[in-house]
Figure (cartoon, rainbow, N blue to C red):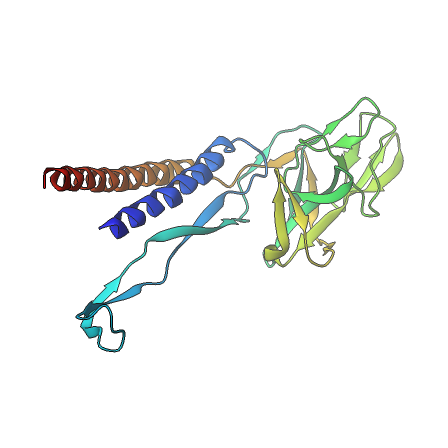
Length: 257
């Protein structure tokens, strides 16, 4: 009897993690460059049930197959979606967007120094600190194509389509833009990404100043998925409650006897 209880409880655990993923997507719907994630749900291997006649003799135990029994589901992994979000013209000089060609594979990203290591981000909403360093939304240093921090001589600057940053009539640096072909090598660190495989190659993209890529979260679909997940969680919760009442009733009968 408890097998069904474990199956329902396992489904509740997977659905709770699914709700957390969807809630995180929903909470970042206004975060520029945010990439929504999907939970990949898998089922445990099924068990084959058979009738038994003599539990003390393993060779004569099987009389016939009853059928298979599902052992429930679990959330195997979280997969980010790297599809492009909508593009908005903000007019802010510190908003940058990497425009990839139609035949582009993978994901174009900016390089950022965060916590002493080089990470990559799709969030092009930058800022300039007091020392005139170009910073990411999380406070990291934006890196040039040579892996150096970008320090501007003035808060007024321009970025060409080739990524060359100019200020006060001089070339300051070339913005680092990289192409991540194998998305399975990406490990999420906050809103940034760490590449666990080979170093990414420079991306052949256009840099647009004054434009920003919005999150690729579909608000209506995410809300619908969140409600459906909640209903499924609620249904499995009722199954667990039914099993709990049945077990309580069985204990009462055993006490009476």
